[in-house]
Image 1 (cartoon, rainbow, N blue to C red):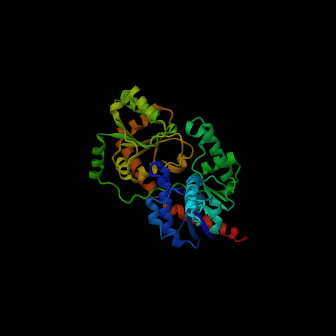
Image 2: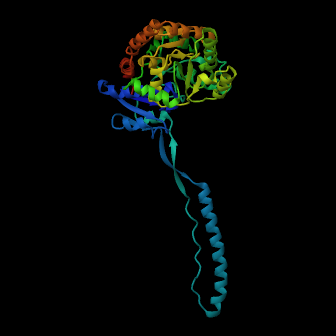
Image 3: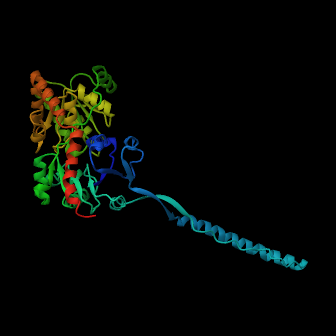
Length: 435
């Protein structure tokens, strides 16, 4: 079959979405020779300058959802025509004066020729073309959406991917529950998921949830856990120390790489840090990384209110190499989000030998097993108690590290893409029935 793959190419500050997308693309490129299908990558207009696009050229056919067209530049045309009209009037006045002069000398030669109006002016613009039209131009028979990002409907059969439907479960969080955001998500999910030939979810629990809310038959779901991102180079001890010195971090610290959304639960993590100090006498630092999506100032205010300013680091968006070093140097990853379970940071922490304390959300046990220590994200005391357990029991910390490393090798991007190939092979016997 002729397979189309649509990716928006997330920017690095999108966090886990960017990491997963890059992993999918690099794995796809490696495995294309093993598939009998023909692949075309569809990218939106923002993707041309992305570094990974340069890597992809020559390895897969790329189609951008934009093209150069000419449109009438009405403003410039009107300006030129107005200038021409003024010239015509001036020429006519000059002709009148000249005619009076040449009449006296008997010269009958025509001295005025009206200049023509200029032609309409056109300019070149970049025009975004709907994915549906591009799929038809390329004769695509089946489409894979590795991320839940495209909302315009298409009538080509496709594989949809869904990470979560938290706007249904927890609509009180502003980033998913505001009227416009909730409506957009609901419109997207109710159309895109229901029309998919297959829906890829990270857990069986996730499949049950999506099937319940959107009335999708269970046989159309495929469970593929998010892959552990490939890490080419784990930082050495000296590299870790250099990064910590760069940010002024010393001693034991808890690490939380998460965008500043309200559902990321930064405030309860701050309260847990205070409880850890006041109740258990354990003073640690807490390192936050991630872009601000509107809640960072509030978290900083709460840090001051709880008198934790000297213990908390707000690093903002940091390079990936620094993130890996921060994982490697951390006492533990405290991933306290309310959303999940398809979160990438715990998987990265596993690969970096960092123990994980994780919110006990639906599907987390299926996805992470006993490689994490689960906590109630709404209970600062429960989070603090988990940190204290790991702090006072070095063998527990070593056990979490060991189990995490095993889990990190269990399911890679290559494994994920090979499973996607199986879905394509399965559908080929259906798709052969029409042009």
